[in-house]
Length: 419
Image (tube, rainbow, N blue to C red; front, side, top):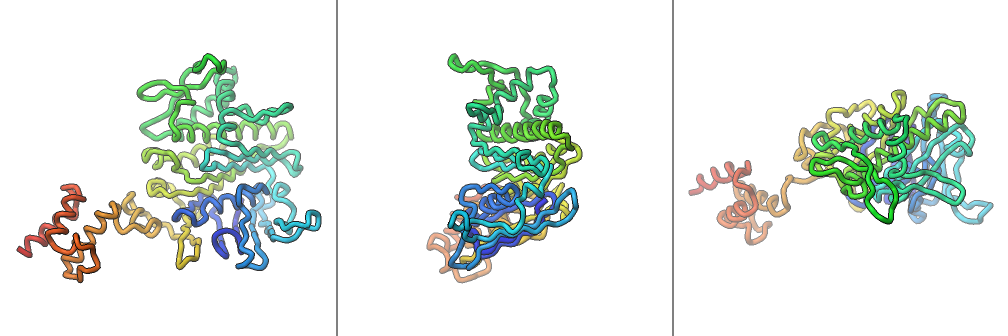
């Protein structure tokens, strides 16, 4: 379990400090401030694998860029502190990250890790014992999640389509039943995905393709929407990872992994609001379906007020945290925000997390601000010319707001007082 992460001279800020929650870590904030970057860094800390531009350094801002992180090791219940510095390697004569501790795989034994990226790719790591040959790491592209990864001599993974059909047709229905339950759990409450019978969809492709039952029809999963494909891919990877976990533990004659480190970028991506307000609680419940005795530590990025509203019933301040990236005078900051229930989407949109004055269009917001200024008898020159008189403001309000808008009664009463 990752307890702390400290970055100096790395990424969009001179310094980031993250004290992680034991269960759910929600990262939010404006675009371009480092949410996805921080997930990449966390993944690097957990796996030792560098993703994309993970190690951006600001050498002009910091003489010795540094990444330090603290892990709680399940077997010993001790904190291991690891520090990596960007130094010259004697072997390569090039600058690279050099750690002061043995590599993480030798610390995080019997651990699962998965990273759901926003581009549809998924990375998976299954730690066995303390020998590196007993760790499995696969960095799937979107197509490999669905079609598998094969080389001349090895099959790393058959992929969603082939495994689904195999699980559905084999006598032992354990994986298929688990897949069905996970898909059902991840579905929106009023839009449950049910599994249908396999079908052929092409004269040139002899494979049977799984199908799902929708209210209007039964369709091949290859024809599903982008949002449903993300749900199906997530469900498959979780079941496949648990299946591999059990197989590997049996081969190594050890207990199955009992810890999962789960990362997902933009959890609401492609999802309708009905799905957004159920996805995070569903993920936490799904993990328990995979294995009863498993601890999950999740790192989730989101821009969605519905996602935040959805976790209000389950948020526990002892094991969950909310973090906000902000830009203050050209400086990016990352701060833990005290958890406060906002009640609904409007409450979240107008909270400090999203910072909107009103949950409306910019034009409607400006018209209401002008109306409020007019009622206070403020100086109206700060507003555009079409919002400086009572008549012009009233016309804009009629144009921009619905007739039942709660602002109208106050405005109309004020107009009547002036007549």
